[in-house]
Length: 95
Image: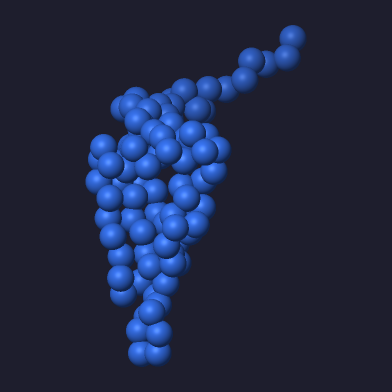
């Protein structure tokens, strides 16, 4: 099952149509709400979006572009470097 609200667009790449043509020459981009409607249909049928298209058209491949949330990163700080004086502290003498 897909999270349809995350889908931004679907790109369909059609199979080559004969001698002298190349796979990927013909493609279709389906944007926003139409892409989400296709997603909902695939979910309803319990099949992948790619299978949904391949059952109806001569499709080479399907690319699904989603919105991906990026976790905000904290400002990176290098580790604090100890001063030479701190690094060279003599160890206590044994008693």
